[in-house]
Structures are given as C-alpha cells and as structure tokens.
Image 1 (cartoon, one colour):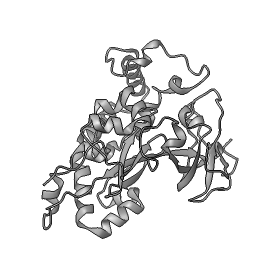
Image 2 (cartoon, rainbow over the protein chains, first blue to last red):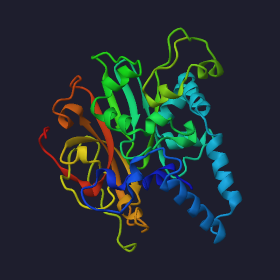
Image 3 (spheres, helix red, strand yellow):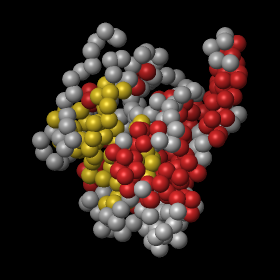
Image 4 (cartoon, rainbow over the protein chains, first blue to last red):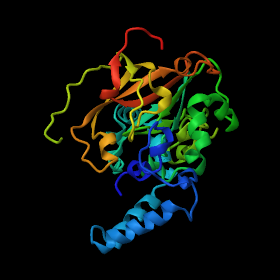
Length: 222
Length: 105
C-alpha cells in the first residue's frame, strides 16, 4: 500500500509485451469495470491480508484515508510557493523529493521531478504503461489520465491532444512530454500568470488547477 | 541474487545512448515505442530495485541505475506532426542502454 505505482502494475503486463506473460482474462481491457475481475481480486486479497493478520483492517482504512486526504490543493500550495519564493523554486527544481519534506509530504517510495513551464518550454505528463501520478500531492488522477486514448496519444500526437484540451502551444515553444514509466513522479510548474505582482501565496494558489499541473492546460489568468 | 553488487554507473548527463531493440518476454517497463531509439541522458535518477524482478515477487536486487533519457519526437515517430524541437523524456534502466555515437535512429 505504499506506492501508487505498485498498485497499478498488475494491469499492464500484457499490453506491450510480445510474449505470454501472465494469463489474465480478457477484462484486463476494461479499465473501469467496477464489477470486474480486478475488483473481486482486490477484495479477496484484502480479506486474506486481514485474515492472516499481515495488515489490519484499520491500517488499510488509514491508508485509504491518507490517499483520499490528498488533493490538488496541496500541489497548488507548492506551485504558489515556488512562484513567490525563488530560493524554494530552485530547491524544488533541483530535488523535488527533498523539497517535499519542507511540506511534510512523504513521496511514498517514488521520487518527485518538477518540470517548469517557461516562455520557450511547455511540459506535459503521461504514464503510457499504467497510471503513475504524483498521488501524494495531487490526489487521485482524473479518469481521462488513465484512459488508453490519452496514454497512447499523449506521446505520439501531444499537440493534437493539447488542442483538444483547449491548450494551443505555439510552434516556437518546445513541447516536452514526460512518460512517467518507472520510479519518478512528475509535477508541472505552470508559468505564473501576468498581472499577479504583489499577490500572496494564498491568492496565487487559487489560480493553480489540477490540469495545469499535469500540463494539459495553463494556470488560470488573473 | 541479493549477493550481486550494484553495477558500475556507466553514463553521464549529455551522453548519447541507444535503447535496446529487443522484445524479451516478461514484465518490462520500457515501452515498445522507444526500443531501438537513440536519445541523450537528461539526468541520473539514482539506483532502484529492478521492476522486471519485482513484478514476480523477487526483491529486485541488485538495484539498477536509472536515467532519464530525452529523445527528439521526430526520431521516435517518422510522421511526427510538430516542430523539430519537441521532445519526449522517459526513464530507462542501465541494462537497456548502450552507447550511441550518431544522432539518428
């Protein structure tokens, strides 16, 4: 239960491989089937873990409570601080995981890489293999982030995907796609909107949306 | 397996590398679309347990050196519909990398 990455792994064994791996039934294709095999397997696993006293029901509940307590508000606070405090921004870009300790946020086994949008660079995040996402700072990912359509198209026609999200990236801007395929988690530091001089961190955080931190959109204009 | 030491680290930021063009069975975290492609080491990420072992309940040791590698989109997708300076980064374990001299695929 420590790392979101591990939770997602079981879904992707047979999508990219070229040989037989583990025989899963056909419903591995149904990402969101709530009556499907995976839901039943998860329930059976939970019951076994509790029955054999490897985990207590209360520990499982606590971890779910922890995950549910994460939300985009946390990410927005981090972004607002980076906009306001250049030294913090430098630390955040140099070592995201270390900077998170200043917020008392454990990265739960993964490392955090923060990528900055500038006049010349726009970053967007995808996990082509499953749904790796910085859950400890943004909460649960949106459903579209886990869809096969986003996961495949974000790497091969990212500008078209961004247009569908309403984000037009001019040709002179480099678009950097980050495939979150292993042990790093990614957070986009959106560009600070204009006309926000003198705003405090609380006011700035209001402009930071979930989608701007995934990189499919921008911070809300002031 | 736990007695093997961590391999020596072989690449630095800026080195040109090629991803192995191979399709071994089993759990792999290197997506098919990037196999055989050439990119540049963007940064060294550290050493992490090998996901190819972890997936089957082994301890993933010895750890593997992990790098972020940056590719030009046009080198991944021949029909890429965007400017030449667009890039894609992903994470690759050292055993999937070999040195590459030419900047093409």
